[in-house]
View 1: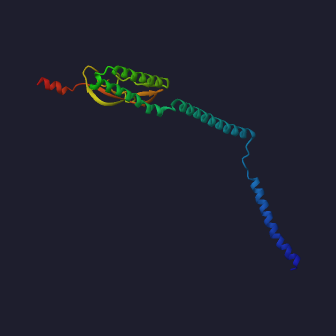
View 2: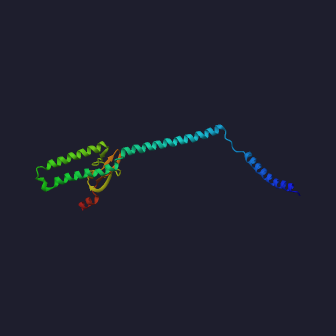
View 3: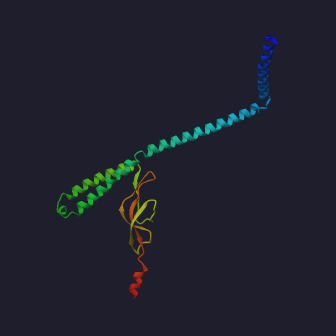
Length: 198
């Protein structure tokens, strides 16, 4: 075998490998790839677009709602903390009225009037900002707005009616700031009546 024949035989395997690769590529091309028609492609793109637009609209609405709530209820925590001011003013007035040493003081009514003016201003500020007291007395007990602290035996009121308010509750634009602490009426038990008959 001559050198030229050897070179040709070496070239043949290389050429064969190239041919095999080309045939494989042709076969890959010949494999039927599902070609979408322009209508199907358009429909797919439209569906994707609609989904994206719906997601964007939902996100915009969520953002608007969060923005509105932040604007309306941004002072929620401040309002909760400020309720103690009204409570303390009420306690101060009661304390002054019940203090024996101050009862004889002729200026006591002026002091109490001054405190009441401050309380009225504070209440009006709360009302302007949507903070209002919960009316509880003579209302049916509602666990969403009331917190029962005690039961009061009372045959004149229906069972479950609020007859005493220990601490006033407040709402802010429909949200509960603080529940009312209340005493609820309950009927006197039958045992007492049976004991009286014997």
